Length: 161
Image (cartoon, rainbow, N blue to C red; front, side):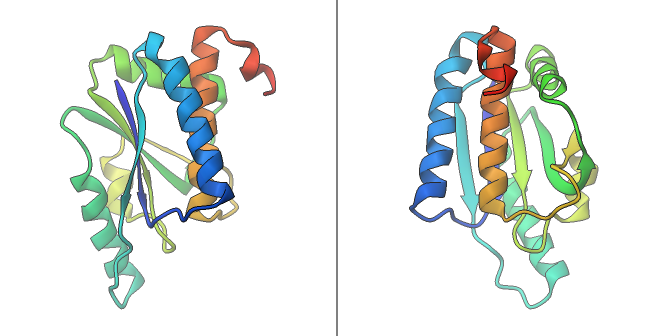
């Protein structure tokens, strides 16, 4: 099963992009034997619309256009459910075993995700009530995907990394 991070905005060159690339590389290497790869990032442009509601709507359409058929959707949103790394790993395996072609993680732009994406998603998760820049959320998510793969493969990384 493919793993896709579909995010609004571009991650510029620098330490954030390098760290993201490192976790993606690790997740891809460890995930092959579990049929949980490749992990890829799809970036969609920020909407130039004048209102936050219109920007979120435009960005939601662009994110959904990146979703392959038979994919499961996980939205990342501050209002989302907090789940443990172990439960996150179990969810990925369940999606894979249920025949999903991909799991797509949706990350909104500066205004957040359109509420319509919550309704279309199979799960909405959050990293607490704090608001993080989309660049940091990508890195946190990529690390959690790598951690999930290590949990599933019995690798010791997941015990505290």
